[in-house]
Length: 162
Image (cartoon, rainbow, N blue to C red; front, side):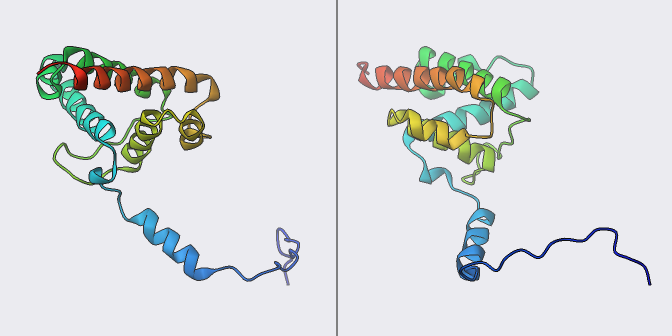
């Protein structure tokens, strides 16, 4: 008879039994992709912009002219491009994006959308909580500033006479 390679100590019994119903509902919720309609308008516009920027990068074209037309402002287009670059340099791996026309969000897009929604509400604590452990703390300030720049440009564009 051979001995087991490793023995694990038996842990003390938990004070309560695990709630399998809540665990399975959490798993189901994580498996269901978030939808673009669940985000605020600034976050949704930025995610469409991010998808468009990705298309232009693959085609090796400048995205700013088309972004400016679609967003109605050169400043908003430039801030969207700046934010996309800040995200790309801060994110731990390549950002996964859905197809341009898809109403469903990848997990990365859902996280970015939540960042924009919390920044739109000027909630720095909520912003940091969304990315705690995802990106290095030293990069949070740069990302916060880039998001605020886009939010401010969107606000100015909304107030500009049509």
